[in-house]
Structure formats: C-alpha cells, structure tokens
Amino acid sequence: MSDIEVRRVGAAQLLRFNRPLKKNALTGAMYGTLADAIAEGERDPKVAAHAFIGSGGEFTAGNDIGEFLAAASDDGTTLRNVLRFVTLLPQVEKPMLAGVEGLAVGVGTTLLFHCDLVYATANARFQTPFVDLGLVPEAASSLLMPRRLGYGRAFEMLVLGSTFPAERMREAGLVNAVVGADDLEVTLLKAAAALAAKPPGALAAARRLMRGDIREVSRRIEDEAAIFVKALRSPEAREAFQAFVEKRPPDFSKLAGDA
Image: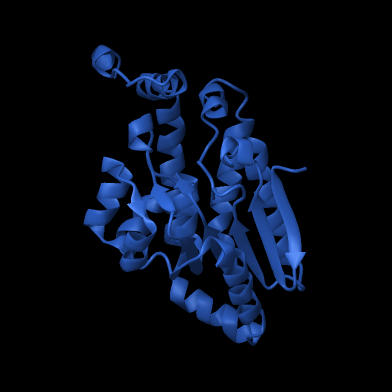
C-alpha cells in the first residue's frame, strides 16, 4: 500500500497520508507523489477539489527526520521533491481542503495556510518546530501565518515553537470547525461535494480574487527555500537533528565558534 493514498470520491481527489507506523511522517518520495497527484488533478476536469487527510489517528508528524538528516549530504532528490510540492501550492487553482486529526507538525500545519477550508478534531495539535531544528519556516508560512493569525501568535508558533490546540486554531481563524473523529472525513468530503456543485467559473474567479497576488507567495517560498537549504547543512541543524534522533536535549553552546 502506498504511503500516499490517492483516490477519487465523487468530484474530490482525496490525498491521504498513509504511513501510520511513522505517524505519517513525510519522505521525499511522498512529497513527489503528492506533487504529481495535485498536478494531475488540476488537469483533470472531473476533479473539482483536493482534500488532504491523515490515517491512524494522525494528520502528519511532519518531515521524516532521519531522511532529512541524510538529505543534508545526499544528491538533492529529497529537497527537490519538497520544493516541487511547496512551490506548487500557491499555483493550485482548484479548492484545497484538509481534515486534521492528531499531530499536524511542520508542513502538516504550513500546508493548511494554502487550504480554503480546514476541519479538525478536538485532539488536533498544530506545531512548527523549524527554529528548534536549526531551520526556518517554509511553504511561505513566514508570510501567510502572520497575516492569518497575527504577528504575535505567528511568532509564538514559528519561533517559540508552541503547540496550538484545535480550539485555539479555530479561534484564530485557521480551522473552520472542530468536529468528532468519526465525522472528520465525512465533513471534509461533504464540503468538497458542496464546492463541486458550484458554478466552476464563478468558484475559480472568487477563489483567485480572495487569494490575491500569488507571485508574492511564490517569491517568499523561493526566499525561504534558499535559506532552508543552507540552514539544513549548518552545524546547528546537524546538532538539532542528531539530538532528536538520540532523544536528548540539543547542545548549541559548543557550536558558538562554528556559526
């Protein structure tokens, strides 16, 4: 069974993170599959919306740390797939929806700022520990999160690394509704079906107007990516990732002379 399940449900393309034994942590190959599926769905006139959901009680634990530790010195395939996916997000013309249960770490949260509707269960937890890992925000979250949540909450999440529960995200305006776990997928697909029933031209035009100039978002993704790649190969990131793998607190004091 694929780590990314892609299937049609009515007019919705359902994209399921399907690696439950690893809490749906994303690999480079999974990013590539997601990018391919979205691009194909954009071309398919029978697909009216893209819907993201997790499995095994989790949305996604973010990037696979072991693979990203290796990515600092590999041939760049992992990072190319990541960049292909995040670069595609602002280009998507059809509505995107997400149903979040459990963990939504890193890209599991930043992806949501490109979605038009987000539903979550009461146990959903949103976290973006980029700085803790010696990295910087991605997927234009440094631009979109302050706009949506306000600078203070965005700084708390992106830099301080605080975990936000579902109800706080609903109050902040990112989550549309908090629903029961048994109702999450039904709610997600019901919303996708309602969008599919709209006049497609008017729907697309309204979405473009509401989202504004995507060039600014695309530029921010490029800026973040350039810094992200450099940071990934830094001594700080190596120490943070290694400490995570070894389940110990990182020690950045010894890196003072290497910065």
